[in-house]
Image 1: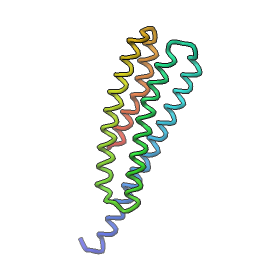
Image 2 (image 1 turned 90 degrees about the vertical axis):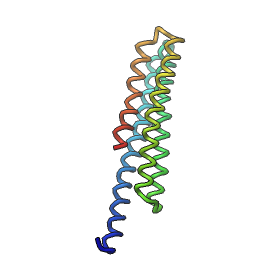
Image 3 (image 1 turned 60 degrees about the vertical axis):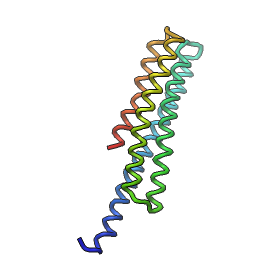
Length: 145
């Protein structure tokens, strides 16, 4: 490999990292908006019901994790654009996405368990909201690839 090829290779790596991080940022921000809309819909459609607060809180957990993932991805994207080593940044972001996916699942199970103890009559709503919010963990897993 000649020295003339090295800057092009570095530019290609930075371009690939920028594209991957931009896609991840859009996906996580979009997931956050989607979970927020679902939480709002649950609040509107179940007002006065025993399922309102469990549903809203479970969607809020997913939205918080999605916002955190978007913020970490944004930070990584800024670092790559500023000239940081693309591999180092993308490795760090991938690691954080994995941790966030696990944290979200743990939080969802914990919050769902608490709601099932407090409001056993809302079991269907709790399980449905957990399953919808848990899709963020699957998205984070896919984005890590």
